[in-house]
Figure: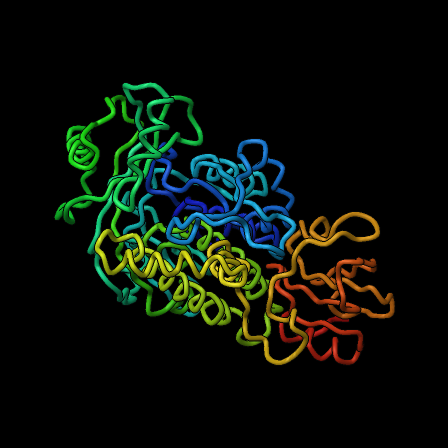
Length: 475
């Protein structure tokens, strides 16, 4: 029996497969498309996702193919500089096309031993107390202990489970295009400065010389949204908005997206779970979708593996939904707000002007920026040190960096006292005795996903907290 079948080979599914393999799980990733997509839907990684790649030793691979950009202008496109004192060693956005991200994560997951099967579409599933039987469209049947649907907003897994997906249908729609143009780069730069607006935004594509990326508001919502727009339809809308179509030709891709906003009623039914867009969809404002999905996977992977390995404490797997669903709900709300602020009507534009003024206060700017880049999340772990429930930033140690000790995906006790012990949990928790001038607490217990589970210096208190996340002591 396979330990876990992951349905969908986007960034969420591939990150999850890799996390599971770090803990020795057998993993098959099923992908209905026979070949990797060439369509670039997401353009980069935010701070929290960059930190995650660093925690797993992957960041250098991404930096080689990406480009660092200054933080700023992500909330509804309001141009503001990076906030002061942003709490991260990676206070930038990494511009990297989703196609590159998927390739790197596929190499990572398969390099760890995950099996990626393309051209395999899911047709049905049935579960019992021991596992899940998956049926593919070609009649093949597979058996797994768990199945995770990472198969996008139109998730087959979610539909087969009968999980509700309430929210709002698309009320606004945009065309997304990457295409060559018939005028010079200088003329395009001038046009972008003069014509950019909430309904028309464009600029050079970040991954191919001479290609431009356009986001264009449509007049209404198309009935057949599954059909990609034609080049003539796109050019016609450009002429309506800008009095020119810029000589667009040779499109790399053309697609449409709307502001549909939905959140799954549940993230789990028995042995089947949802992650990424299968659990939540929202407008792309702020570039949060891909990042939200891979962060779901980072939260879920070690918990699911702990259950299969037999040491998970009661309720650990359920904490995936308890923790991640409110985060998704918050993203849905901030994208709803951003969508309204980008509407051209006088009312939304008046609110936009007011918020633009408020964001001159660094506290407001930082609050909104930290929401977008994923470092504002705090899980409810109960009372304790202010760090508890928050992700830990990378800190310099007397020798090396904290994140260098997190590549294996295990728990970690960073102990500046040298007096503490994880005896009984050493098979699940690494003990690093090191001093950091950047950490003002004697010791921290960090979960595999980088969130602080305990902080202090009392051994008895530590022993009382370890079972909450790492199960009973052994030996």
